[in-house]
Picture (cartoon, rainbow, N blue to C red):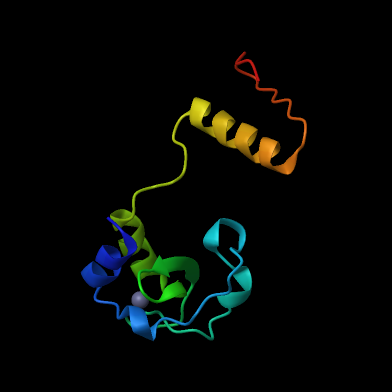
Length: 113
Ligand SMILES: [Zn+2]
């Protein structure tokens, strides 16, 4: 499901979402924004979660959601998180390579890092 489909399924008007900055906050979220001053894009309750979404034709926008609508969106959005140890290690290696840092992973289950 892409962003436009997700917003349409949730009944959220993409044009009503606040523009987001051009730089991506860490993993698309910002703790500063979830101080209760922004309403949920779906129901209007104070937002408890936010993320940056790239809306076709509109660019980067904040998707502020309350807890329940965060969970509703999360169920519709494919997870980008690794679900296996190998996936987690691959993500760590990619992040270390991107940062130009040496990486040595030590685990207690005997898996080579
Ligand atoms: Zn809500």
